[in-house]
Image (cartoon, rainbow, N blue to C red; front, side, top):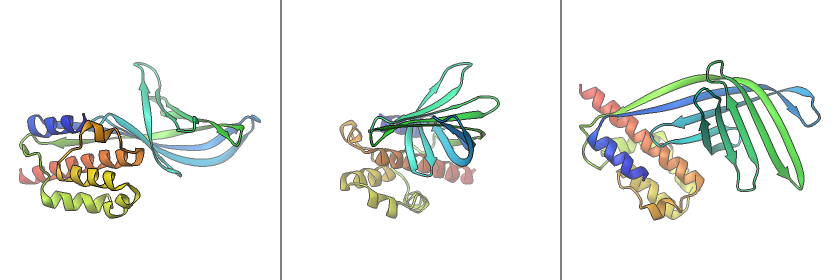
Length: 210
């Protein structure tokens, strides 16, 4: 489905891909003993309107998230891990106050904590031109994206199948739905990153021609 949307966008209409970024700092937290203590923690939340995907960047790397937004309500990112642990982050849409909660079970013990802080909001807009009608990524852009995303290193973390998917996506050839369903979380994140980076470079190239 993602490859269909991507192909349709770059071949038919101009693309406005909005990337919403919340860079959050949580200087305080409380645990089940109800005491507060300073514990600076920095987490970045991102949502890409093009892929309709959200993810979190923190001390433990990158994790895909679900996003819940109700009109007039809070912006909420949440994650349910394979182990059944849950993290929830709610951000006020105007003041950008934030609360980050963790509900975890570790060695048969329930570990809970809640962090308090605020976020800096930023929005990036990427545009693709409708003039690029070939479903093939130019070689110069492939090289730029390969280096930009450090794919030589990132690909080593994936299975051989996932490596082929990423390289084919970079070239403009997208996997089938069946193969998409087999991708790991790390592969999906890299898959999305490659498409976004290619889109950005296509826009830059088209803008330079004007």
